[in-house]
Length: 336
View 1 (cartoon, one colour):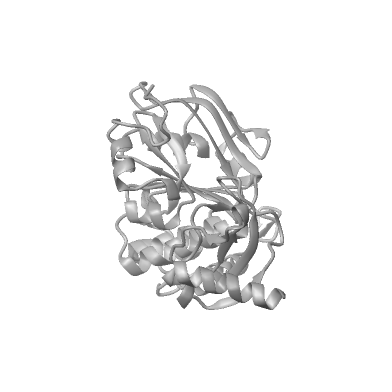
View 2: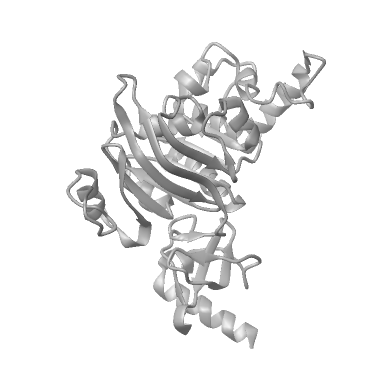
């Protein structure tokens, strides 16, 4: 009976999704944890391929797949566990003008929430405030049920937050330092790498070698200076370092800006793998293809506010474009 049902579901999925038909199917099984769509539908079966998950839902007994991307199912989150909650957040820019205006939203475990919009509408200030680099002028930020509105960058990192800034050389890497030194910026203080204030450089070098191997970073060696690396390899080094501690939330600002197709695919795969692991990813992007390929939900930021937050399956280029111009919200609500 189960075998017949499994074949029926796989056949139905393949008929709807060309990608699924060509996927390397590993197994079809009931989910090992509650899996819920944003419409509230419960996953009856989970089709696992070797890259990730493709889920089959059964609302009203009518089995159908969610929208499938090249790596992961869009419109799906693993759990309802809220990792990050932002309430009435107000942030000032460098000119002391409101860049973020009473913004509220939540980020859940096992999802990628995309923030689309023309650069300069408050995305930079929002991400810097969430990471602790910029102070909030009002509102609260709650991370894993803890108020972190006034905590430091280091404390947020310790609590399980990672930040991929848009300026990879200005904030994330030091050009004049080696690959090993840049790889250890977050870890050199940890007990396994230092004792009594004395750093074990052999262990740090080994860690860098592991990053290079795991993330396929093309570089002359751990002693090579970061300034000699390509943009794609530099970004992979940042992702390797930031994800090594298995963070619960990853803040990623324009992570593939200026990268070639191959590097872009590598970065996307890393982010999706982190989502699959159960992390919540907040992704700021101006790239529509990136938004539609990776995100489960999408918000459009316009003049410091969100023009709605909706499942990616409910929007298209036109609705996002209208929201980016401030002409119409994506959720049907009237403009404020």
